[in-house]
Length: 608
Image: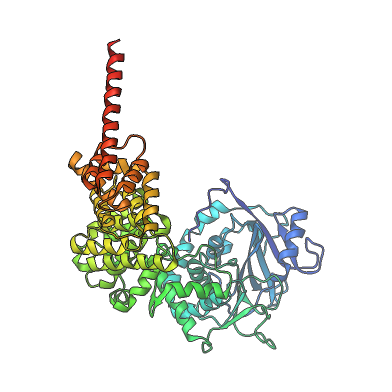
C-alpha cells in the first residue's frame, strides 16, 4: 500500500476541511457540537453534515495506542465515489470543562482520499499541517482547502512507520479478525479489546484480504457503541458497551480475549496471513478467484482448493516453481515429496493453462537431479501433460500441441506411464461410446518417444477398437504426417478377416477416397514396386487376398475412370481365376491404349 495517486487523479487534488466543536450557533444553525469552520459551500456543508454528524462525538479516556494522538478517534467513511476522514478528540471547552469535542473532517473524492491516505492520517500530527483557523483556538469560519499532494508528501514517514509496525504484529493476534471477515465476507465487524492498534489491524487485513473478499474497507478506530446506522465496516471498541449484547444483529463481533469458537478456521486465517508475509503479494495474487468471495460458501470452496495440506496454503503451480527456484518452505517440500500428494497435485495441474503446463514440464527436466526428491511431481506433471495431449474431444491439432509434445519428449516420461495414459484415454473413450481418433492417440505416443514393443502394444490396442473402414480413413490422414505409421496401420487392416458387411463399408470408403491414391504416393518410399505392395494391401482389405471376377470388377469400379498403374499391377498379382485375370488384362489394355492415344494427340497438336 502506497500513497501514490491513481493516474486518473488530476495534478493538484484538494480536500475540503470542516471543523466541529461545541457552539451556541454553528454554521448549520443548531446549538451544540456542529460545524464552526469549513471550506465547503453552504449546500455541500449541509450535505456532508447530514452524513458525518452522527460520528463527530469524541470518546473520553486514554484511547488507542498506535496513533499519533492516543486520545483521538479516527473514522474513514465512503459514500459512493466520495470519502470522509474524521479525527475527533476530547478537549476542554471555553470554560475549561473536560468532555467537549474537537473534530476535523476531510472530504474529497474517494480516489483522492483513499484508504492508504486515511491510515497514514491516523499516525499523523494533524496540528502540524492544519491551517491556523482550524485549530482549537482559531476563530475563522472560512477555511482553505487542503492540498492532498503536499499532504501525501508530508505523510511519507508515517506510511513507512505504519508498514514497519504492521509487519511486526504476530499473525495470531490478527487472525481472529481475519477469520471473522472470511466467515461472512460482506458483514460489518466489531472488534472489542484489540491488543493491536486498529490501524495496524486494518492495514494488514487489507493487504491480505482486500483482493480476495468482497466489501469496502472503512473503519472507526475508537467508538463507544456499534449500534448506530451507517457505521463503517470495521468498528473498534475498547470494551463491550454497557447493556449491549455486542452490538447490532447484522455485525459480527470479535472479542479478542475470548476462546475461539472454531480453532481450525482461526488456524487457516493465521496461515493465510503468514503466507502473505512469507511469499509476498504476488504469491497471493496467484491464489485469487475469478471474482471477490462474497459468501461463506465461496470462502470454504476457495479454501478447499488452496489449503492443500496441514500448514500448506498455495497454488500448486507456485509450489512447483518455488521448488525449481530452490525457495520452498519445509512443509511445502514435505507435501511435494509425499506419494500420497500426487492426486492433489494432478487435480491442481488440471487447472493450469497450456503455456504454464509447458513451462513446468520444461522446468522439471531430467537433468535437475535436485528435484528427484519430489518424485510424485514429475509423475503428476507428465500424467497431466499426456492427458492434455491425448484429450480426444479437442481432436488432433499438431500445431496446437507441438510445443507440449516437444517438451514432453525432452522430459523423457516413463514409457510405462505413457502406455498407461494412452490406454486410459482409449478406455475412457470406449466407455463413453465416442468415436476414437486413432491418428490422435498414435501420433501422441510416437511424438513423446515410445517405440518398439511398447509402441506395437499401444498401436494394436488402439486399432482393435476400430472397424477396417475407420482405419482406412486414419491411414489416409496419417500418410502425410507419418508414412511409416500409415503403412503399419494398412498392414494391420489387411490381416483382418472381416465379414461381408464390413467389407462393403470398406469398399465404400475406398471409393469415396479414390483408393487412397495420394496416400499411396506418400507411403511408397520405394517407388513403383512399393506402391504395388501397398495397393495389394488395400485390395485385400476390400475384396480379399484372392479376388475373383466380382471382386476385381468392384475394385476397378471403385478406383475411378483412370486406375493407377500400380493398382492394376496389384490386381493382376492377386486376381484368382481366368475370368478375374481377363478383367484385369482388359483394364490394363484399355489404360495402355488410352495413354497411347492421349500421347499421340498431344504430340500431333504440338507438331502443328
